[in-house]
Image (cartoon, rainbow, N blue to C red):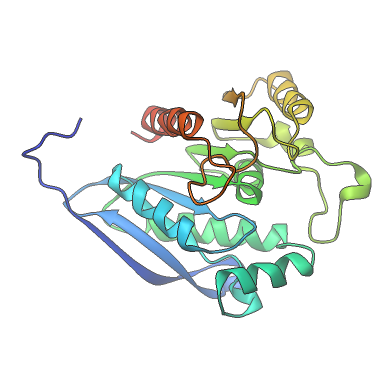
Amino acid sequence: MYQTNDYEGMLAETVTMQGANGDTINAYLARPLGPGPFPGIVLIHHAPGWDELYREFTFRFAHHGYVAITPNLFFRNGHGTPEDVGAKVRAEGGPDDALVIGDVDGGIRHLRSLPYVSGKVGVFGTCSGGRHGFLAGCRLTGIDASGECWGGNVVAAPEDLTPRRPVAPIDLTKDLSAPLLGIFGNDDRSPTPEQVDLHEAELKRFGKDHEFHRYDGAGHGFFYYNRPNYRAQQAIDGWEKVWAFLEAHLG
């Protein structure tokens, strides 16, 4: 609990890291100042892109005591405004799952290489990043906690699969190795409440450590204060669930 006479300081900057296939990519890193060690977390940005909102999220995680890094998952499509680059990626069918997971793995390795990181590392994402947060928990080992906020297309029909998204993440549930937090709005259409039901039923079938929280009166992206879909009351409670979950699993 923060006290008014505590020292507090943070450092936030753009860095480079090694992603999938050994590619050097840019990322945004924020950390508390002080000796630590601090737990680490990789933030997986959403489909709109590597934008200001995700820099603010990264800074917010650092404020709460985490060394947080957000890789630019769209760097292979060039640089420009987040809106322009994100639109280009979406027009091409969205990010490639294998490359995203490779970049997330690179972010985890980067955090664990830092002397002020405790060794405990989680992942967290919203929208497509929520889907990738779950996918990372299934594909990668050594993740200590995974946060999935309104991850669309975790449940996917065969006709929805593409070369970039060759597997429905729900079909990998048996491989999930990290405790999972899920946060969803009951007015969302991607995922729908029925898809969230299927997602949770599969987690229960395989006995996976998870907790799901669902909010009435909230749809997709209800944490996004800069958009009309923001819902203050639900977002405040949702963030409290995030901090409690990470404290329990990352310390």
